[in-house]
Length: 413
Ligand code: GLV
Ligand code: MN
Ligand code: MN
Image (tube, rainbow, N blue to C red; front, side, top):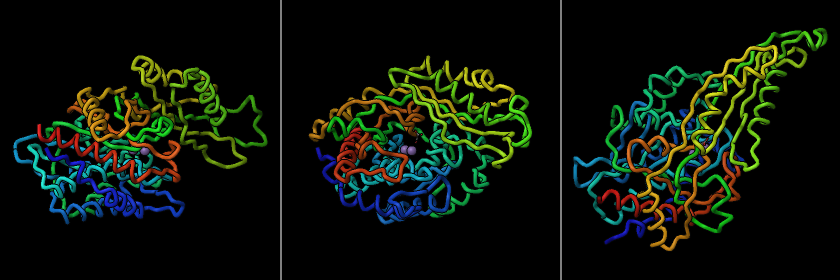
């Protein structure tokens, strides 16, 4: 039987990456293409143009998710989906997310080039706002598609730059005017997402493909500590309600509480704002974020559920409000999909291993909907969320070849 992998075109896949890399290019080899910005719209429009050239249907839903569809032979069969995101971190790279979208699109092109038919339709998907750095939490698009949330819950979210999600979504949808509109999710028979690993394990092991077994639990909190503004030169230290000092105490206590000899815990304070932000005013307000992740369900839930009380207990004379923006439990991928990826990599003589994912991905929210899996390829020194993120064209093509055969098997089924 014809293998779709035969028709994967390494150069075309690479050229598409370099074309998308122009939108939001920082000049330092990286990209700033945060969700729902004009640059996000430009990247989507480029993909829409390529889809139009190949005669694929283009569909957008109410969350701004964009689907490029190749029809199957059975009009009633549920779709097989594959994709990821085109938005990036403020100082991001050219592969995180982009690879998942472009490899899925490459599979559609390969199927077209090979004249290969399949029973189920296959859709390459761009999920809206995976990164969550401009509008938190991330994975907005996949959360809405999965039915876990409604888009209305996110529409009033405001970015640090003052933009409101509702307006930005409308503008981004207008960037692909040719897209048909679809409301809500559709029945899905399978989902596979390719992604760079964003860690060093594949490179260290000298392997090309990771058959991902699941994603650890991930949570995101916004913490507001409130004290009283005061004069830096006059208010005695003991009389102060210094929000910075309390925030520092909370964060220090969290580091001590989460200290882990096995190095499994992931804990990050990625944003910290002291207000009013004057060198000679005691800060009366601090806002900071907590990103906490762990693969063990019980440990993850205990820490997430206890976060507000823990912060309050270490806030000293200040008040603290802990807002849970998102807490997604650990998720296991479907064993048949993981085994399929492993087997196909073997058949294609691409060295592979099973591995969990430390990063969050839209695939997590597809798990309740359909058999789901992920394919990782290496990135240089495991560097990601960084302008120096790099991936090798051959590795990207290898992952796309595994994806092509896996999607075709599922779409024939
Ligand atoms: C996605 O980039 C994540 O935060 O894991
Ligand atoms: Mn990503
Ligand atoms: Mn990312």
